[in-house]
Length: 406
Image (spheres, one colour):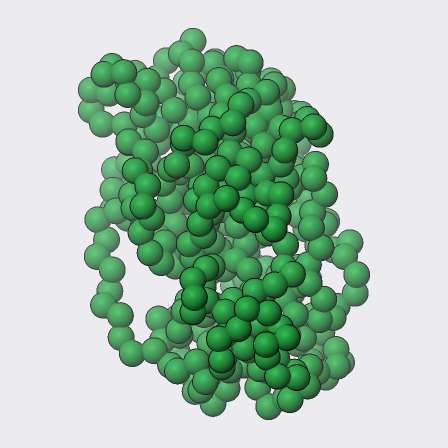
């Protein structure tokens, strides 16, 4: 396991120093072919697919989930594993803030609940859409101080949340063993990728807001970021005491973890206590080319309200698709008319996939007519990169700094 900004971290024997997460993903995106209606290519296994270094399978840790970039197509789109997360309420996931640095808090995400995400095409579990994401207000990219984020899911999950540290649970101190769980890199080419794994660390130092741990013998790695670090309390039950934030690049010596008890009062408790606003009427799927929006909650199925021109009206769309209407149910592109694709509105379910037709076009536009990467109906990793650039201009995205992250 190895914690990082945008790739799965593995549980392993150690870590290395240097930037690893966001930078690797951006390089992978930038090295893809030129803009066009092509789907994204899978990332290299060394940065995307492997789990916890020196760890073992963790099939029973149901509350440990994988964080993914939300898929826009119903067929042919590879899964993009970003980080790990810990379910702390039926509809709330705690993860690392740097996991959201690329696409920002307004990016499109989903989570995976299950023991095996990869290899594709048959993940063994279920998906749920992320409806809202919030970073800790005092998060610092360079130092990973308060490197924490909370995700509100569009629907609650049927899994017992991890217990948070309550008064009297015990004490986090140097020398204690801790268990880390994640979907990250294993540093072992023979170990199946995308599997939820666990391993044992030993606490080496404790500060008011964070703690370090070393291999005993496992280690978190890229992709494990945001995953839980668990310690047995005074009553013998495991307690969520930390989340993986960073470490050395080689995943061999040091794991830096944010303390959960330092997040409880000012960050986690207010978020858990929030009352969700009542849902109002939303725009019809077949009217999105003509109906303007002003807020995300006016858009169906979690589509975002995005200004398509500066100062112009907002349209409900997915980040990897241009403006368009949604029509009949489908399972693949062949079920849709010419110029349409089978687009994914929800991660799963009978009504998740519908035929998407770009506004005012019966055929897919040529790249020069479409305005570059975002114009074609294919989602593609480059379209995600354009989305990230747009978010960065709004102050939503940034690169990880310091040690390994992801």
